[in-house]
Length: 83
Image (cartoon, rainbow, N blue to C red; front, side, top):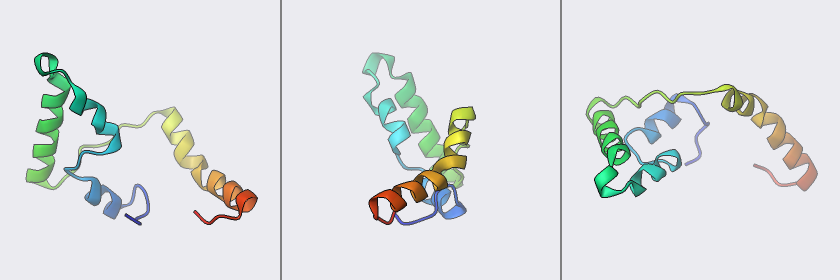
């Protein structure tokens, strides 16, 4: 997928899919599968509505979002690899 992160297309592509941040919920134990059940309901709702559940952010995530372009530029400059 070669789409700008956090763009409308990016959110559309992620909608109703098990993404990396959701994989941990697949390992829920059958008797204590609240996380798995919640994940199934979220994905079902996303498929039915076509709307992705809002992704909560915190200050660390905001810092990362803000600084990512600078980190990419520094890496490209130092390593000569285009990201």
